[in-house]
Length: 196
Image (tube, rainbow, N blue to C red; front, side, top):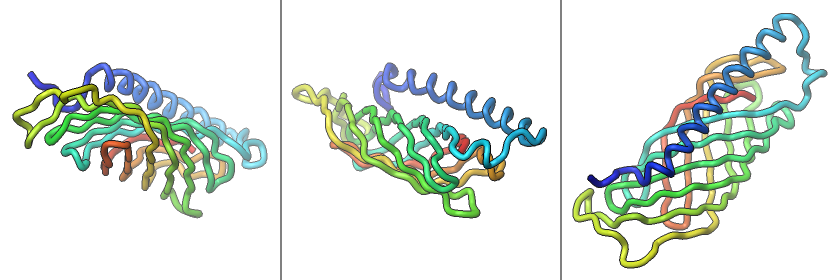
């Protein structure tokens, strides 16, 4: 049976990473909330803090249907500016089957007074075209190796629903993400968690 969204060995590690990032986000959020209630956390004592996030979604790419999962870890330098490392696993199906992993230097800003984030940055992408298909059928392996390595770009628009305090913000997130590789461009609507 043909696998629709790339190789399982590409997606499985991202599922584990996504789960781990989600647990860390929830634990960190609960810990900081408790500290804030006790009055032990202040803006002066935590001017720079960790930013964590994870998300997954589905959408469309130039090669057909697409799915992607991402995890981010970095530093919230100011209340409105963060720098993170983001890893993304993505796959497409329908016209061609393509899967890749990207490593991005991610810059993100929060619109002052809101929970709306805008971010993006350059990435290095490694991937493989595993099959060529015509509208989901007549799939054949490529005539030669289709592995590739090259530059890309990751970007996102996101809104977080949850805690919004001077010392911590975070919760459930809705996002619209763009993932660009040397072979494809994906637009993905997703859900996730962010703590910043």
